[in-house]
Image 1 (tube, rainbow, N blue to C red):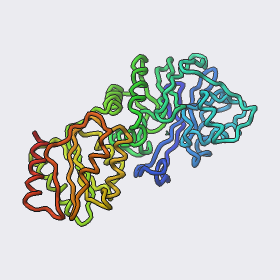
Image 2 (image 1 turned 180 degrees about the horizontal axis):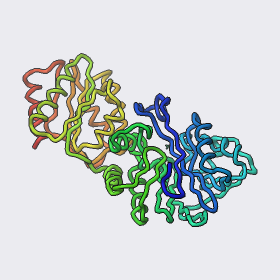
Image 3 (image 1 turned 90 degrees about the horizontal axis):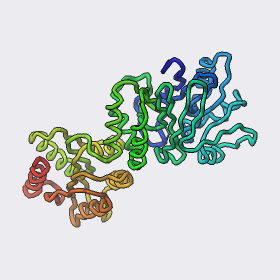
Image 4 (image 1 turned 180 degrees about the vertical axis):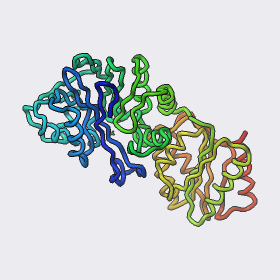
Length: 384
Ligand code: FEO
């Protein structure tokens, strides 16, 4: 696949992965992208996941024809992109591997490196001339690992963006970009909003016509749309007005409360109401929705003098990703000593700029007139 006259796509689609990075459900698979830049010198941009050695090397060989690569640029050492470095060097041993000091530290941890391996250690802002193409290396620490760097080709105005602007989903499946890019961003990079903001600021100084990420499609049109979403996500700005109601329920009473609230909000004209059963629905989707909308209601039962485990996990997902700038309310249930609200609020006390609802709900076992009235008051406050 041609990206520009001299940049070719040599990535692969993965439809056999069960959980990406050991935890993310990817119903439409995953793409591991890799690119070849053909010039007087030839650079390969990253390798692919370990399962696709032969397929990837075959694609690289087809693009190279009778030429040999000069450089293998390693932007990110996570194994979904780096697993084939040694396999590549077995076929093309004269290639110079390009990375930064941390890249080579991690490479040495993952592999037994040949001391004779040709290396080019670059610093932030260094350039590499391939002929007419000039690669500019821009360090992007913690988007998503500390050694990550992105690469700007100032000739074709292409940003090789590493994990940035990536998404779940293989490239042979047609699906909405934002939905799976948002789930990917908040799942994988969401903790590092500040670092992503720094990278975006650097990117605004560049004339970018094409973005070539390591996952998901190459982006070449309407780039402002994608950059604007990334700016919102990484600055913890709610993307849409709406309410996520995330609940756990043991015997259905807390669920009944969550659904009653959702119904009132929908009837009251709330632009979007999302409901997640944290024990059954995709946790990453619930995390994504918590960051997408400006309001969140957490509903759970008291359990072991704390809260139900799936809610505990969910709140940890939010707090470790610096959840902030939203309105939050609580629905708790408990038959003899409800402590769920106190526990949930306590877990969130480090979150910045949270407005807590005044109207929260306590259920003692099952919904009764008083708890139904409390849900109505909560709905009214959320709709105000
Ligand atoms: Fe796609 Fe952070 O690896």
